[in-house]
Image (tube, rainbow, N blue to C red):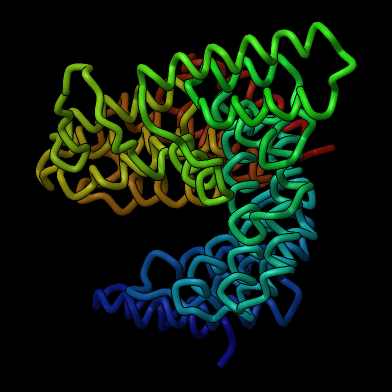
Length: 420
C-alpha cells in the first residue's frame, strides 16, 4: 500500500475518532516518504503523528530528527533529538541515549547540554572517569556562554566524582564562591598562606584554621619581620577569643567543602541556629494557579526561563478546563518561555496544540490571544528554520489585522529568505 492510499485510510480513522490508529499510519506514511528522500513530506507526516500518540516511541523522534538532518536544519534536528533522549533516559536505555547525545554534540558542538547528558549517562553506566571528563567539558562550554551558575553546578558534579582533583579545585577558585569557601579551598589545596588569608580566616571566626595559618607563617617565612609580627599578634588575638568563645573547629575536609557547595547551589538548607526572625513561606505547590502564573511571569522577566517553564508545568492541572482564557494565556506564556530558552520544538508543540487542538475551534478563540499565539508560533518556526510555516502564520495574522505589530516587515524579510 502506497502513502496516498494510507492517507485515505487515515481520513477514515479520523472520522471515526480512532486517533491512535491514525497516528500509527501517519508514522508509516512518514517512513515511506523518508525512503523516497521526500524529507519535507516525511517531516509533515511525523509531526502529524506525534500529537495523537498516547505513549510516544523514541524511534518516531529519531526518524523526525534524521529528516531534519537531511535538510540541514540542524537546530530543529537538535531539538527533536532532545525529545528522543528524554524518552530513552526515561526507559533506562542508556546505550541509545549515549549515541543520541553524541549526535547532538556533532550538531551543536558549542552547547553544554550534550556533554552534561553524556556525563549523567556515564555515571549510570559506572564509567566515572568518562563522566568526570564530560562534566568538565560541559563546565567549559557553560562558561563560554556566560552561564556561571550552571557552570558551577557542572563543576560540582565533577568534584563529587573526584573530590581530590587539584585542577577542579583551581577552577572552583575562579568562580564567584563565598569567601568562607575560598578560604577553605586555600587550606585544602595546601597553598602557602599569606597574612591576608590568615586574617580572612580569623574574621570568619575559623579560629583553628587561622591559628594554623599564622603558625605556618612563623615556621616558613620567619625572615619576613612584618609578617612574623602580624602572625604573633593574630595568635594573641585568637588566644583571647578562645577564652571567650570556647570550642574548637576541625580543619575542613573535602566533605565540608562539598556541603558548602551544596548550600551555595541550594541543595541544602543550613541547620545552624540563628537569632534572626523565622519566616514561614508557602511551598510553591500550595499556591493557587493565579499566584504561580504571576511568579512564572516574574521568572521570565528575570531571564529564568527554565524555572518559569517548570513552574508553568506545575500550574497546568490547577487551571479549570472551563477557563479557556486562562488556559490560553498560560500556554502563550509557556510558549514564549520555551522560545526564549531556544527550545523551539517545545514552543511549536505547545502553541500548535493550543491553536488547533483546543476545545474551542480556531475561529472561536479570542482574537487577541489567537493573534498573539500565531505571532509567537511564527517566531518559533522562523528560528527553527521553517520559513514557509513562519510565513503561513504571519499571513493568517495579516488577514485579520494587517497592522499587527511588525508583521509587514517580517513577511517581507521571510519572503526574501525563502527566495534567496
